[in-house]
Amino acid sequence: MLDFSFDGVSLSSFGGRMLQPPSHQIAARNKSFVKIYGQSGDEIIDNQSYNNVPFSLKICFLPFFAQQTAQDLARAVIDWLAPLQDGYYIYRDSLNDGYFTKAALTNFEEITRELPTLLTATLKFSRVPFWYKDSGATAISLYTGSSNSIINPEAYPSEPLYRWVYERGGNETANITVNGVTTAVPLATGATTYYLDNVCKQFYRISDNQKIYLGSLLLPDLKPGTNTVLFNLNGSISSGSFHLEIIPNWRRL
Image (cartoon, rainbow, N blue to C red; front, side):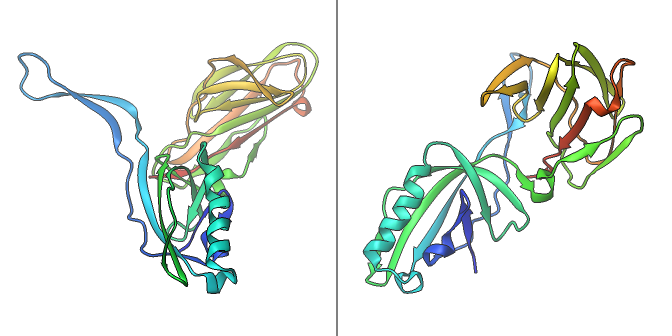
């Protein structure tokens, strides 16, 4: 059975079915073709990113399976989807088992009663370019003093979330080396959790549920295959006061 879920709620829970499977659409590279005077052939400007992917779903609802009247079922579906038009939500479907993406609902205008026992609707979405592997949302703890080997199972570099905790007084620095590239990261006084989000290109900590931005620090992405991560602490920092983990965000187009 073809099914999808949006914000953790599945179509099948409303007695719904996809009338046809969504097509397998691949995100297009964000690039421009620029004409240069006197040059035959356009110059390609690659913006090093991918565009969102629009897609639509044709769905139907069967009040019999939902054990509701058609009117009550239509109201329940509206109450599910109508509030979810304000941003991205987690989207899953049965064609991409073990993966999820983030999608925005861009059009949901009506539910049509085709028959007394059949309701239909067309939903339009815009999703981010990548599908993310479920296992890539699990944090990987790293250890100081030795190389940590992390294997990216996908064919595309991942943009991980680096997260570390520093639990002692004094302003210090630690060196984090990813595939031979070493970056010095600052550690402020007090027990603090830091986040370096490669997806959003943000370095921050959270206080009172608010992001406090700390600068433009970036660490390398994780390439396909084997990655080596090592962190070294300066002499005044004990290994017990610093903990580093990576949420790898394995992904595919």
